[in-house]
Image 1: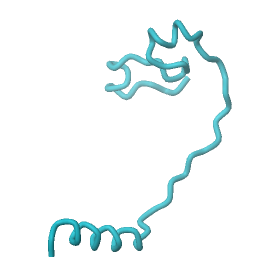
Image 2: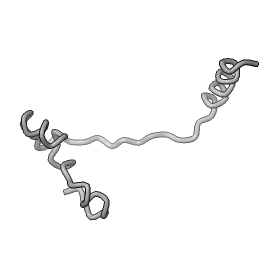
Image 3: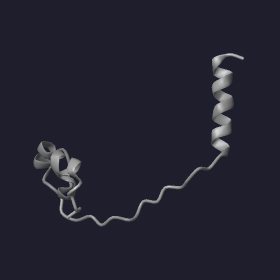
Length: 63
């Protein structure tokens, strides 16, 4: 058995198993940055514009 046969066998086994389902709630489009500000901030959504320190400390409350 070569590598590609082994890889195909493992893939077919994993495709048959279902280990979970994703749930993604609907989101409402709220405020957005202008394209220029979004490029600087790295996101178009002000709600996602948080500092890394705030994120790492876990104090971001999503508002």
